[in-house]
Length: 180
Image (cartoon, rainbow, N blue to C red; front, top):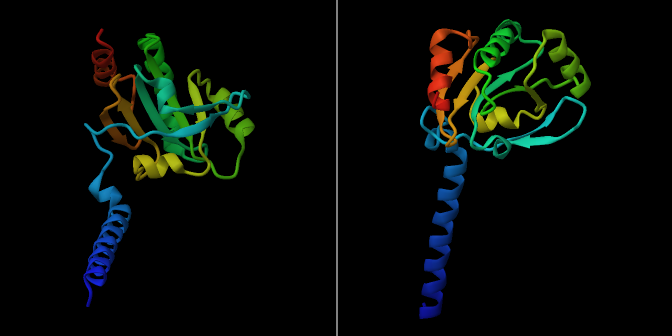
């Protein structure tokens, strides 16, 4: 075997190992990089349902305290929880607080989700992600699921299931993150 053939063999082996490691990292990414308290909030994009059709991303909320709720119109616990976000918004009327509810409804459009949100009296950003990209990026395990994200972009609270977001503890957390 010539020196050239030996180097080609070594390069092939190294390339194969890099490929296997890359594939393993992709397959195991949720285990290797879990979305949990203390981790950086993953980026996302979703459309607003207010008729403007704007695309929002995490960057649109940079420097704000974000309460990111993943929900669906068919999810009864999600619907029960929604008024507490309105109360939280009233309790903490700071412009640096952004409540963002992302609907993951598959078979309804923005008009339907918007009408549903208006029927509930929701006054915060409602987005639609019918492709469930936010589910995957945030490793959502059930609905509703809520993430409280600090101004620096780190997740400070992750809650699976409905909660009273206007409770004294949650209001205190948000006020603390806002520096009030």
